[in-house]
Image 1 (cartoon, rainbow, N blue to C red):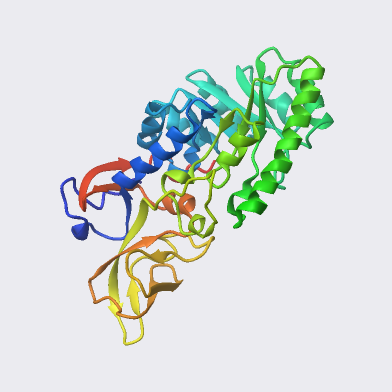
Image 2 (cartoon, helix red, strand yellow):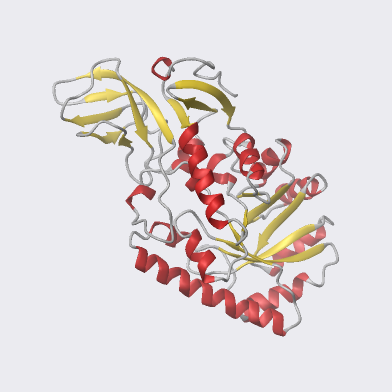
Length: 363
């Protein structure tokens, strides 16, 4: 059940009920402009909706020039299409009859792409009769899904060509582990290695007379490295729009721009002790898989640990009972999935409320 919004348009930020997911519109818009201006006319941009899960965000990205959205699950793709997005790529393997039926149904409403790394899964996709764009996911360092680059990918491409309802659309080459390599030099080296694997695979495809229309991949921590490597035609950044505490730990240097924090969890001090304060934003308000949130704009305060509904604040000049604190989530994607609404703020006033339509879309 979608919960009622924790705020009203026109309300002061300090009066918003908590915990609430706050989006600073001015910073969000600046982050968008930074990325789109930087890569304009160099590669296609297909932002990842797994981060924002919101058609309102997607429409703003498409208005700036995005060709469509990436999604990780069929249910995310359904939410994007229902919200007006006409082109979605599921950057994941989709297995199981119920999901395949829904993917096929979605392909009758929008342009749909999907990744494969296995011939058996490819045959199951073909058996739906759906017209789908098929991307071969190649393993370029993530050590998760993906067929090996080179000859194994070529063999799978040949299998795709046997199915009249399927179109070989290109390669998915995403090095997720590289996104949070802290040093620029090491991050750059990881992407260069991935690029060589892409070049090798594309060369084998071309030699076999199989056009490879698109190589897609890249993330917020590396996208300009992929652009400059020249192996990718399309990038898939997601977190750049909001940024989180973990991404802030990366080294940011040319050619990568530094994005700013636009996403916060607004919390209230609900208890006060001599050595700490407790806020009403715990594990159910902010994901801690990539570390604890940081306290925004309050030097000397630290969010030290959390339980289900409580967060401990320690440090100098502890906040008073009832005081509001902005927290920067450690990891924006799973934090967003905890909320039904973005409370969109400009100049400390609520300007809009955007529903997080794909919240809980994990199937």
